[in-house]
Amino acid sequence: MSAMASVDLFEVHLENTRALDRAFDVVARQCREAIGRQDHLAVDALTKTCGFLLGARMENRLFRLLFERDGFTDAQRSRILTGRSIEDAWVATISEAFAARRDLRPAAVPDRLTFTDKARHNELVQLVREELAPIVTLRNILGHGQWHRALTSDRSAIDPLRMKLMKTTRLWHLTIKANLLEHLVWLLHDLVVTQFAFERDFDKRWTDLMAAKRRLELDRYAAWEATLIRRYDNRPDWRKSKDAET
Image (cartoon, rainbow, N blue to C red; front, side, top):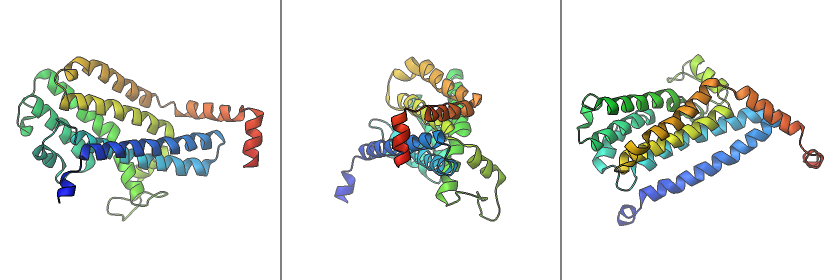
């Protein structure tokens, strides 16, 4: 028990962050190469692996935030995590953070917040529901071994919405969502542990978040993939010879 009590859980989650980021970057690089050479089976497998890793990354970022030094108390973490999905835990984290910052009961958020804080709270919650939740769902589908056919939650039938999510998610989307996640984590870090940075830097961080969201809405993955294919086709002759040998 004493050994467990001495573990710095923030440091543990930070080490996991580094390992997950490295894994995502390695697999994403392999996926970009597979896109370039139009190896469709490899692209499918590697894209799903990146989706699984990004879902794990989202969970890791949540726990890293919850165990930030000078951040949440044990009681707050318990309220956030008990009986909740990862998506709902993200939403509860936002509400707990605003409650702590404004000295309110969590149940009073967002109703008792000022107009500005309420708008910020609601926009952040909407961002989680729209942008993070689908990746959490994708991670759960893949985690249950459904890599070709996605099933309903009771595993009794094919789920067309989950199938669509699995088939339409590309590495391009996952890369931008990974960037969006980092902007969100830093904004919430400011809310949870800093005294002045949240208000001071909110507009800049929100602008970065919205830039990533707009890129997703433009959905220019086809042009991005075409660029990777063109680069592969135009690679130097020595690279072509090396590729042929392998």
